[in-house]
Amino acid sequence: MKIYFITHPEVQVDPARPVPRWSLSEKGVARMTKFAARGVLDDVAHIWSSGETKAIESANILAARLKLPVQIEEELHENDRSATGFLPPPEFEATADQFFAHPNESIRGWERAVDAQGRIIGAVDRVIAASPNGNVAIIAHGGVGTLLMCAHLRSPINRRFDQPHQGHYWCFTETRAALHQWKAI
Image (cartoon, rainbow, N blue to C red; front, side, top):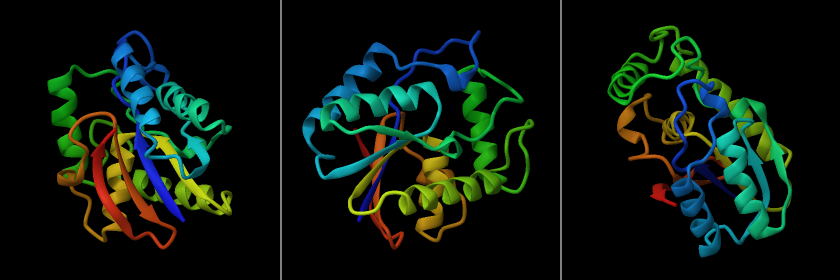
């Protein structure tokens, strides 16, 4: 079994709306549509998504191509950043740097990285257990995808494993062996 962990591409930034409710931008829709059409995931039998709008929209694009349903696992959500809400990009990046650099601390009220890592590992384990007989696509988010990758590589939490920008994927087996790290969708 192969598990593809895919992050949503570009979003419509709306500081007035909670981040989990942001939608894909036109560019994000175009990138996800092009990725789905490339056939990289044609061997997928199960599609799972976090409950965040941008992930669901991404999953629906893939599902339409593969004619598969989308299943939701709420615990696949991004690290909880509701304490700060929207942060301008330079401030967000600085805070994210601290999130990864100090995984046992809550940075500005954010969910601790070690807690988010434990949550995403558990969620992915549930998804795999609920997806017999076939490869799996999980559409979620970059922060928790990086935390999951660190765990599978048996590396301490480190932002050097983060995706370069939104809209990437990596693949691993049911034994948690990474087949490759981030590739652009």
